[in-house]
Length: 425
Picture 1: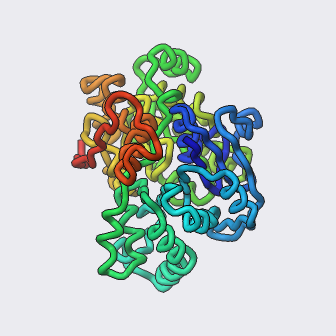
Picture 2: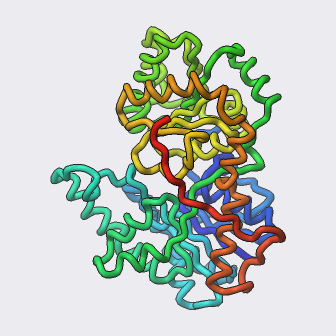
Picture 3: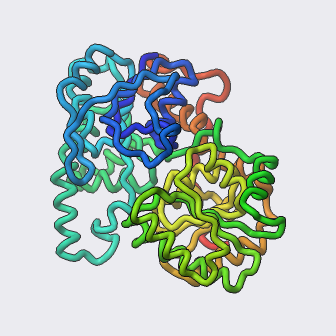
């Protein structure tokens, strides 16, 4: 089947949604073409950030880059779509405006082309929305700006698409908030909940890899290693990373076996400042600082760790879960859908030092008696893109049975169940 992925961003070597959908569709025998914006800096080593992907046809288009992540491509994109004449179009990151020509292509071809639109809004991105917090005048201007920049496009995309995909449980409600009240429930019902996932061909628990990587990192058998992974930026340092590291440092002062791996440093001023921040701590020798890593290295580091700690949503959360790593996540609403029970992970209150310390202490004391890494990996397998692909297939077949994507042999649609949350260990 001929499938086009339209996305403003496409960087090889990273576990982003557009990359993994391209890889997964190609592995399942589809003819995949990626229509993407011009390449920007990736922060990865040159041998990991490239456009040489033997599994897909990657075509890039120059685009006008505006603030707030807006990207406009020229008429060449519509021409390529018309020439390609795909059976299915996956439009990822609709809010960037890149690829809005998809709507004209869809209107020309009607049912001859299935359009799947991916939306990724979550509460962390929209803390200024009504109900999230008391609104300041600045918040109200942000709401107006979001509605003006993205609202009309979202309404058009929802109306045109055959399937809308929300990558968090919050996404349909945020998108529906753009519409008049009578229309909101109908819009919510059109969404398929399909979260970001991980590549099961890369991320998996490997006892031998764990032992080798722990030896490389200087971790002893009794050391309890935390991992914090994020692409380090000035905004993330200010909002989440510096407070998180400071709170973990307090816990290290009373936990002699604790060690911390921080992943995501780049050759950039903000990374240098964050290194200096950690170096100034009296427990700095208990931290291991790692550069922004490609997926194989991340897999090794997640295997080596005993606990993943995340104060904000990141694709690294799902990738770490793919190795069976136990998770301690911020309870801000954007990651609730990832954890089904305390056998897989638990939550701490965002910004609450005592809540974080309670979660760290519980994990250090009890993880050895719980499910094995391999068992947790199995419980997290619903986030493997192989399973997410099955869900997409099943939903497209419902819209037009057997016409566009052939379901693979075996179980065609393993159920994804929204978890009943257990917030405390």
